[in-house]
Image (tube, rainbow over all chains, first blue to last red; front, top):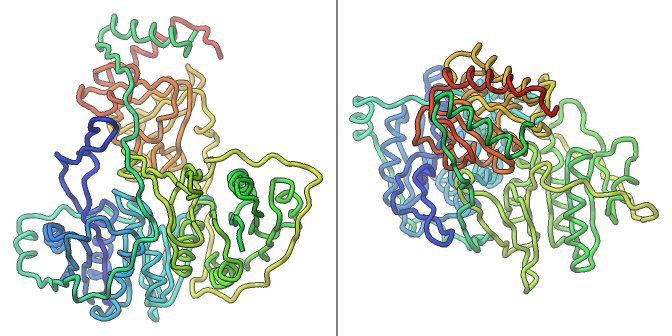
Length: 255
Length: 320
């Protein structure tokens, strides 16, 4: 029965980011969430456990406030959580996150299969899963839209590539990164949330980990993209539509 | 040894990388090395496009995965120690690049859309973050500076005849534990929306699959193509995923973009930024699409679209 680890990131919900003065990003009204595709990763782990038994462990590295995300993850079918937290973990670079997750998995969590989302909804660097596989020295299958555990401890996966799909297999242990279309993440109910509070969480402090190395990639700046346009609004009346068509003509779109 | 390396699994993408690779190489007077798959000895094309050295990878066996080349390319890179290594951001390329960066213990700028040199010679790279809401500028403190470059970010390098370069071949790699059992080639949509002058985009406001006909009528009338938002292709499977517009889909640059029942989430809006005129029909006046649009009609698409079709029919003949 497979031991499955699903990794997730607690991120800013990008829908709440406002554009501040002078092109800076305004995070004052933001909410947080489990990164979109990581919800698919957790769901896939829970789905496979439903079929094959075994265990599902969720794992994250983040700021102490991410405890809310740990509880959320536990309400999605996981058995236990490992949570490495420190206030300095707010802006970890992909290689740093992969190093922390790798250390915890290697020493503390027995695993056959590790599932990550294909990329996080904040940075979307799409590197943590792949780097984690390298750190652990195990095969990696990225961009997976269908996952099956086959006979004899092999994993079968449909990996989406530009020209279609590659059906691949690899011996366990394996890391896969999943696409959103692999499943539909559950919406936890009240009972799930209550049960999540009773599930074990292993808290890991920064001091218990190897020193986190310097980030090779340095962020020099982050500016809001300019997206706003005139936004002339027309009513859905015959006159409004006629004026809308005129506006298109004026812009030379239609003659 | 200083130098700019590029690696792409397809010829057209290698040619795009050569454009930026050569530009960066000229700034510091270093050489460009192109790592490409050996296809009937096409090394001349890459040399004409700006490569000073072409490294040909022998074609992989049917069941072999691209990552089989990882140990070989990692050893080559360690040996030559180039300044910059650019890799085409296909699915396989992105996977390959992240694993190579891990092996080389260096940073990787994913989905890099611009590279330039700062005054002190630092390579400054740009990418989109927060679903496209922000442009993130990064630099890399370790060697080599690595980046994956999305297709069509740069124009293909023009051929310059009379250039010379060296060509060498790499031996077959060891096998990867990942084995390919089958390849399913998807049918491409007959239309290419990235080239379309008019794009009518279908969003979640569309209630039934057959209602997409309305969008198609409008597209036909304006000589355009139909595209969609992510839920329409990924969740509902009403349209193929190569018509999905957005950060993780295709980016379109038509003269006219018209969203029908598109809410305009940032990931989608990022894919239409290049449109000359953005229009939207949505019954929710607070939908974010109206912020990104030039012209908007607040109303039910089921009411507005037929009226719009009628109004447009009246002013035919159209320019196309």
